[in-house]
Image 1 (tube, helix red, strand yellow):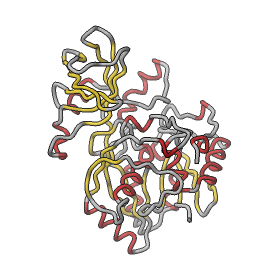
Image 2: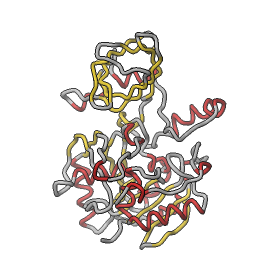
Image 3: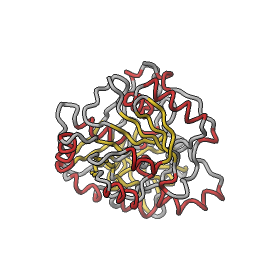
Image 4: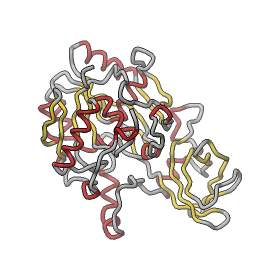
Length: 353
């Protein structure tokens, strides 16, 4: 398939600029049994069944954007891509080095510094499209002190609206179950869940489990090659606990469904099962999912609406069936659904091969 096969027309006014008043207020478009069904996100309590397992991504968004000044006097904007783990991955919070995007008028050279407030960040060189930077203290501590929440580029507000929403974004651009800091973008399918809804689902016999995948800034990078086989995915860190693998195995054994909350959970689980059976562990993944991909773990998906011609659009098309997904997106546009991070949601059953 070609890049153009994943394009669709989206009116600008359908891109959600703010979250719904309450997390569960969103609409839910369902792709079930090859049919398109419209409803509300709270309908998920009826769509799911006792014995199903919701798998959540517990990554936490960090304040990953920094405004800086070059030692030559020019301005720079730093965006974290990922922290470089020390020898002990569990001490990621103590690492002072990271790969970052740096927006500057002229490329940085190794040995140059970027100034934030009274602190100096050292450029150690390049790794592909990213700069390898050393911070004066642990990266996450520095970002918490000086950074800004990195809202997606398609959320564009005038200055008055931006200042009014900043504090709300600090809460609403995190899931209620966010625990492990490291993401530069939220796993947005999870933004629809409130603590009350998760408790209700548990009372209905629907279990939950958590994996971690730290979403990188590369998630917003466009696919530039018309031939999909030429695209290189960005790298993201993931972790799956042995207890989660066992929980998935029990779910499958009793006939329940593994329901991924977000495309990041699909990439985590299917990447960990790429060699055969699902295994626990941690590492980095560059898994690129497009139509024809053999899904082995996930049976259903809760997700938001994704950008045209994006890798996430390819993933959901692979999972739900290209023609049905594209028809559903056209229907969502006609029905005035809200799109992208703060927008409405979908429930997609895995297409039958």
